[in-house]
Length: 293
Image (cartoon, rainbow, N blue to C red; front, side, top):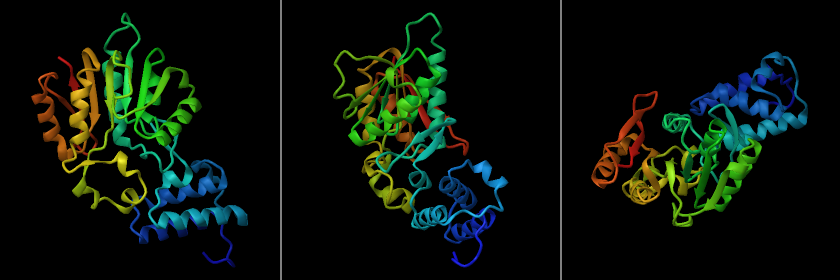
């Protein structure tokens, strides 16, 4: 960007869109708008009423810094510090996985099954395993005002982010946050109507093929499960069987690449009924629901 030219909002967006597009960005215009709105302290939609405005040097310098970092594959969500999920805004840092639209399907599946329990039953108990930013647990708490939730994660730094998100959305009093490897740190008597999880499911071989945006910036511990990609899910199935109430559900997000392997694990477990698969908008298997017999 030349320092001698007049850089209006409209021109900044146009230049940045072209700059990102040349570097292969998937959504160059959207990225440009999000970053500029953040730099200006306004909403994206407000940019369109400010096309002729000329940002001051301080705000333009902040925008330029974010553009440079984005060109080096830094995720937009980390640059601005937040990401929308299920119409809610969540704080994100490099300590947590960035919430993705596909995971909203898991929330829908959980809400459907809990709401089908009926109004006469006691409040639902839910455990979110590998909560990360807390997006799943917080969203469920917002939509299930009487439910009690437990959110566990192996990372203390991730739990700090999740707690902050729970406070900002007014549900911190109904979510217990526990630093734990799956259920290890939970009381032996803890039982749940529903266990949800977006666990690590990337194989070691897949890791090298991920985009630099993911591989170089998002937490590896939240992505990679092991050589097969099913290692954490296999552990989760075994441990969840002892933590679910009779007829309770385990709902997990998966990679389409391991769908058959996960279904085979569920069917061979002996403790869960035949799994139900939910496909994403690309018609790929994304969510597996398993009901305890």
